[in-house]
Every structure is written in C-alpha cells, then in structure tokens.
Image (cartoon, rainbow, N blue to C red):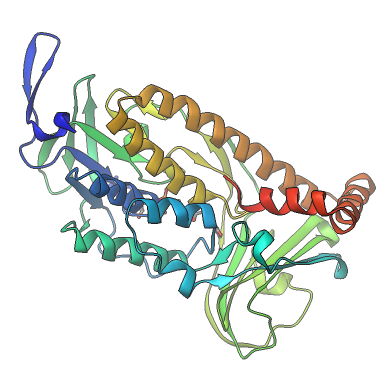
Length: 375
Ligand SMILES: Cc1cc2nc3c(=O)[nH]c(=O)nc-3n(C[C@H](O)[C@H](O)[C@H](O)COP(=O)(O)OP(=O)(O)OC[C@H]3O[C@@H](n4cnc5c(N)ncnc54)[C@H](O)[C@@H]3O)c2cc1C
C-alpha cells in the first residue's frame, strides 16, 4: 500500500504532486460507484464520491441481487443486511401464453448459493451508503463531474461547483450516459431497441407467494412480462410494452401503485474499460436488457475488480477481463431476450424442450439454476 501513502510520485522524470487529501475520485453514487467506494475503504484508500443528483434516489430499478454479489460486498466489509431483509426468490414459474410450462422450487441447501434475492435497488444503495458513512465517507450530492483530462500519471477533474482537483485514479460510475466516457471519447457501440418497455412498482394485498418469480413468455405480439417480489407485499412488474400493468394476463390484488413508467433498452458496451488513469464500471461500461437481472450485479463485480486491479497494479488486465465477462453477459442476456420475445414455432418448441430437460434431469436443472445468478 506504499503507493497510496505518498502524495508525490515520478511520471517519467517529472515529479508530480497529487492531491494531499484524496487519491481516487468516484463519479456517480449508484450501486456500482458506492460499491467501488466500499472496496476503496477496505484498502484504507481515501476517496471522494460525487453525485449529480441532489439527494439519493427513492426509486428502484434493480430488484434482483445475487448471492455472489452479496459475497463480494461482504468481503470488502459491508455488513450482510441483504440476506435478512431480502426476499428469497427460490420459486420460478414460466408460463407460455398464460399456461404453466415450468415450475421450479429451488429451496434447500443444494441451491442456496444460487438463489437470487429481491431487494429494492435504493435499499441496496442505502446499505452501502451507511457503511461508507461509518468509514467517514459521505457522498457529495449535487456535484457533477463536468470535465476531465487524463494522462498516464493522473487525472484532473473539473466539478460543477467550479472546483478542480487532481486524482491518481478516477472511477467512472456515472451510468449509461457517462460524462466521463464521453469526454474521454471512449466509444460505446451497440444499439437501442425501438420499443419502450414498461415497469411498475406496486403494493399488493396478498395473493402472491413472496418467493415466486413469474415469467410469462411468448404472449401475443411477442411480448413477455416478469413479476418479482421486492418486499413481502410489494411487486415489480416489467413488460416488453410501455404499460406494464396492462400487459399482465393474470390479476394482481393491487392496493397501491407506487410508480409506473417506461424505459428504453440499449445494448451497448464501451470499447475499453480503461483510459489511462480512468476505469469505467457498471452501466458506464455496459448496458443491456433487465432480463436475467444482471446489470447491477455485473456492475458491482466490476467495481470490486477495478479497485483490486488498482491496488494490485494490473489495470490493463481489469479492462480486458471485465470486457470479456461483460460481452459474455450481454450475449447471454440477448439470447434469452430474443427467445422470450420470439413468436416462431421453433423458439416456442425450444423453450418447451428446455423446460422438459430442466425438469427431467437434475444436472440440467443445476446447470440452469447456477447460470441464472452466476457472474
Ligand atoms: C427496469 C429495470 C430493472 C432492472 N433490474 C435489475 C435487476 O433486477 N438486477 C440487476 O442487477 N440490474 C437490474 N437493472 C439494471 C441496474 O438498474 C443498473 O445496471 C444499475 O443501476 C447500474 O448501476 P450504476 O451505478 O452503474 O449506474 P446508475 O445506477 O445509473 O448510477 C449512475 C449515477 O451516476 C450519476 N451521475 C451521472 N453523471 C454524473 C456526473 N457527470 N457526475 C456525477 N454523477 C453523475 C447519476 O445521477 C447516477 O446516480 C435494471 C434496470 C432497469 C431499467
């Protein structure tokens, strides 16, 4: 850790003075930026976290958090409040045009480390923020990164309050529309799906098993819906059409609609996760459809890998390795999205065959369940 205890170093033959106070700037306090700050604190590295929003988001995008993600966070010291608060999503049902196709009950020791959990993203963020506060790190809300100049020795960042500072490293966790990525000219190739998707967050009066995730595929018009519990009497509904609740083919006993909205899906990946002293993590590095609930989980894994790579002095391998993992995740997510939304008899038959394999052969079932939440 010697490198981080000094505030001067040589870049070529030039002596460079870095910030006396902070060595790392984290841009963005979504789940991945917060996770990066937690990992930094576990190494005793001081950081600043700046966030454009004026206060924490009260909305939740992600719901699914995986055991491997929790393990990563616990390894950097975050208390495991997740497991006691989250819904254990151990039952999965697939409906094909409303008719039961597959039901899996994955309770029990054999699947414990693979069963996904349901927790609102804003609660995950709150747990991370509380941990950072205990470490003396508070997110600086209402401050955006607006300019950046990077070299092989450090990065100078201008903030929206007019201040500027130099950092050893900048972690760009500023989401899909990353200012840092754009300012550095890192391309983010891919595509945007034309059709907006719908999302709703509802309280229910009961009548839904809080351990059950339901996927209704290949409905008319190539639509599908996903329903998953966020809390005991709170559900998330996602649909491939703008009105998520209208898309549902079965009634829910809704007592309150907390929020509804639509969103556009982009499938993109940054060409590199590193530019000199800047590392990209989370949605700033990749984005894809929420099918499979992987985006935040992948981003948190990036965050911890990025900080490990800085500490261990292997940032180039960070970019190469995480890019590969990101590309594989995007590929898998896209295959599932396409199969779910295809109305062709071939893909319908394929889904039915897969369901039969999973139900019949324990090895196929195990491989399938592992694949759902392994990153
Ligand atoms: C409907 C939906 C459901 C989803 N469900 C799941 C799920 O179940 N599981 C899962 O793993 N993923 C899910 N995802 C994906 C997940 O929400 C994202 O992958 C995750 O939020 C990415 O986190 P992030 O920290 O990288 O980016 P963000 O959450 O977008 O955070 C980026 C932060 O940076 C801030 N910022 C932006 N620009 C600047 C700047 N210049 N300076 C300072 N701050 C800045 C923003 O205000 C924001 O707070 C879902 C997504 C959607 C849309």
